[in-house]
Image (cartoon, rainbow, N blue to C red; front, side):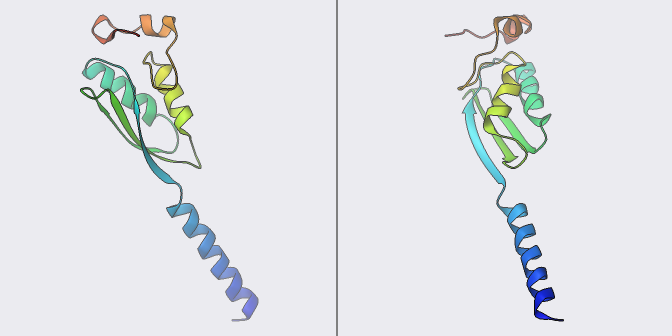
Length: 111
């Protein structure tokens, strides 16, 4: 194998390796909710986005843990998706229309 071919193979391995290992991050952020229906709605909103690998909403801490590929989505997009389902996050507030569409048991006190 000549030197050009060897260098090309090494370059491809390096680029592929960086894409696989450098993109996944885990973040936590505040999401308001009250019950298991909220948990399901919040988690499903985040999981619907391409690149989101793991989500877990902790009701007692009002906190969402999310693991995602930064090359496919962003923390702002994830928080926007959750907000569009009626739940306030630390960056965004749901519209009154979306919040009012929540079932009664899901309506939390807004600050």
